[in-house]
Length: 420
Image (cartoon, rainbow, N blue to C red):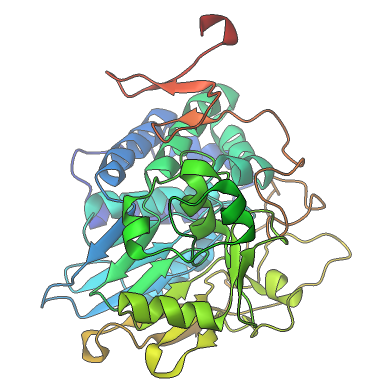
């Protein structure tokens, strides 16, 4: 059954696509997804969604209308498609009364990143105002090279189509907003706080200052692969930073990119921006296992910094029994996952938490080397990349780009060194 992408996407079409993709996961031939949605249809979804996301600013501000009764916030899902379907069955579908914010890391690690991404993009195209997609650190070239999604695309759609779809995916990532503010009370972003714009390189590394929402609003989205320096510094921070238990603002040595920030810095930011809640994601049970001084994320939700009347910073993780694949000697955490519900009665800043367990998974292939090491430990400047990066240039300042966007057609094309 081959589905065609209509000019207007309906909920009925999304339901048909979701069911067909779920049924297909139980077969032993991943390539059969191309019989449900062709490579050209996938490229169309990617291109149309990119056009929508390009119109959104780095920081998106949403003031829900009187009709909106709740906003569902979702953390990392990491290609665990069956769990995403369960989440929708519990939370409901996006509509005029129910908005969604997916807070990054839709792909990699799990075996069904393609299916998860296609489902989310379909919702975004059907209801662009009610369905928010925020970028995570795995919506980058580095992570998707190392942790499975690039190879997954190639396996499911073939190498020839993959060479077209992967650059289109990277252009999509580069268009995604980095953060969302709800009703001027709640900030949602993937990793954490960020440094101020305009600092010299030495100061940014050794004497950093906390940034503002004004800095974030004016910042670059980071291009295909934010390296955390220069014009992509704020993007790198937002995608990779972590809270710590003690006060302080410092370079994130553990990851090699981003910053670490303490409760005092969270309080300072909340008070300066008149916010009451920050929801971030980025850390699952494997990451928190290596940081026992921080609250457990085994339930899918925790409060990292309780700043009293000033507000809270919380971590939200929506991939149960994560990661899907583990090395023979690794610990299986058996974590539950959560999503958060924000409601107008509490001024959109007192999350109600719904937890859920993993759905039984059909047998599947792993698309990355599970002994490679965690993306929780190494950023894009590490030496674990499987090949030379493409460095898609979408106007965000990536130097030495091999892929360029044509100004007229907006198609990405490979530029050889001899052509430059």
